[in-house]
Image (cartoon, rainbow, N blue to C red; front, side):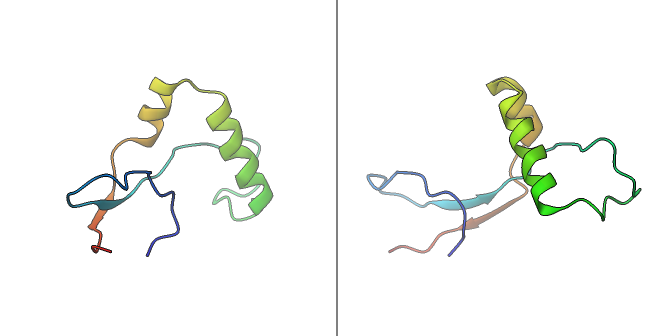
Length: 75
């Protein structure tokens, strides 16, 4: 069982899949070239800023396609 968002498709009578996605974002002003000093709070703020600053078309571009997909078990 994943920890992701559950679509409300309880009416669906076919196979379902758990798809994993990434979202691209950047953090400017880092003092470490590997970004290892970025805090969880800074990551959260950067992700929320990215989401709030783009429209739906840009969001789809920032996410791209699923990088992993797994068929879910029937309940």
